[in-house]
Length: 381
Image (cartoon, rainbow, N blue to C red; front, side, top):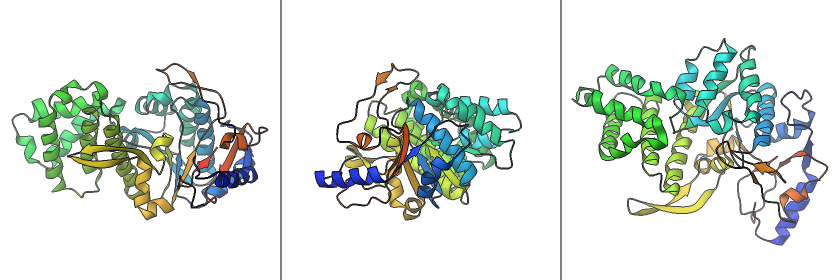
């Protein structure tokens, strides 16, 4: 959070102190939702609620988000939960998964949502308890994904699926001599993700193949169709994986495609549904990264997924963004050592909140000040 002057910081401090409400618990099984009324009122009629996290090793935030998901689903009518995970697996794979067996649901989710969440015990109440339980009710919670990195468990079925699509529409590329021994294997190699040497070593020819497939398929299918979007994801995934040394380029490619995927979910697949979004705060923030890169000899600003929402007034109007911060504690992912989070500065948001609250909610949407540099409408728990 940044404000342009001390006077504005004082105004914000008074606002926070007067407009912060206590949240009693982040336990999924808490049965009294009175403490979430302020949150529900702030969400209002929003059709999309984005739930961030400051680090992928922030377990208490997982628990807090899980309780909010239950509340949004049961009290506010949100029935879709979209993860920052495999677009192909969590859409086509999920849609074709039988939902009458809780164990099968848990197994699928554990293999098709990134391990930074599924390997964390704090994610278990959502994955193993709540989501399966909704399939015993009249209002099951639909799952979706919007990450272009189509590399998780179900992705081993992507290449055979696309082969069937290409041959169904008799694309000219299917008649090439190297179609089965090079083109399809190249597509399949991308599911190996970061270690995909096959795709990297065949970069130029693979790029040409993907462009050709996209052009030929576009002559047959609408541009907003799922299969067209799959090819777009392959193209962006390929660009990201073959430029791993340039972190900013990876953000540029990935976040732009994640926006297209999420927009498709909101406008095409679930046009009448309310959607919750589980992602890193960095991706959902409606701000540029502050960095720029050179593409085709032109310098462009790197933008995160949330920032693209500002270009679409309808998406911006119906989206509510929720951020999470912590006063103290540890963080750490499964593959990283734990570390202590930095203590907040003396005159900071964390210190403006009453120390009597273990958890709290502040709606900043109504705090509009032209000198507030982060002109988004963040909300913080």
